[in-house]
Length: 316
Image (cartoon, rainbow, N blue to C red; front, side):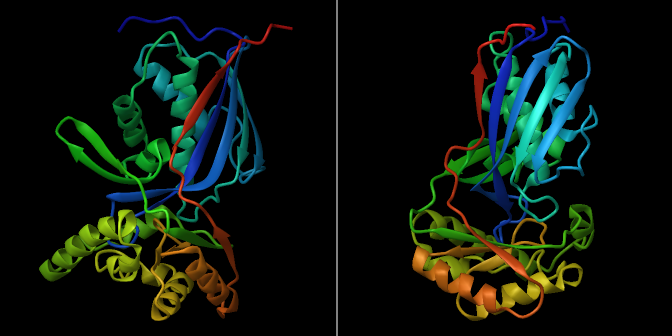
């Protein structure tokens, strides 16, 4: 592979990436929704080699601030994919997406790095949507979180012979997400390890029907969301790892709200059919006995990840 020129010193980009909720009940490893809660990133090319990361908000004092940072690794991976040497970088991150809560924080970090690389490569290499999804899926391991983070809205993700694919759909304007976030975290690896190697045939058929119904409910008929979010493939198998989450989901569903585990958990996503229902659901969460939950009334993000290139700053 031919080595291309590195991004010029002083080039700066800003990136904005939404949180995501994957699975949405029956759409295991397939469906994802972008939410209006964001991580913001500024990346500037410097003369000195290496990379330093300044973190504000979520992850401050916890995540690595050197080249081992996931965002930096994602930038490096993308540049190396196209034979572009890694320049020295200064990164400033302002994070709002909770870590380890099933809201796509690792996918957002990966997408942040890839989108930063896209901006840094302006005029050197053009990264189209297929390339972005391919790189993000390779780094994340599956496309269900990175697809909505990249493209926004409701996404259906799948893998074909020619790589990961996605279809973006526009969510009905009445759909009003409520995200309930606990203080405790849950390892995605642990949650995934609790899945069985096989499931009963009738459960597979059940989820196929509910997944199809969920698409219709989200884009056209929100009144069907409660039935459409039933699941038999993964949530019950993971219940032992997040009893507080399951208890809240069951209480909300018993009152007619379309509550599901957000991603691998332990957050809960409630897909309300209108803002009034969301207020009622939030009141139930506030009165729920057990662990404390932070209720976030979020819009659906329709834009996905964005990157803006800024003029090169003059060297000091």
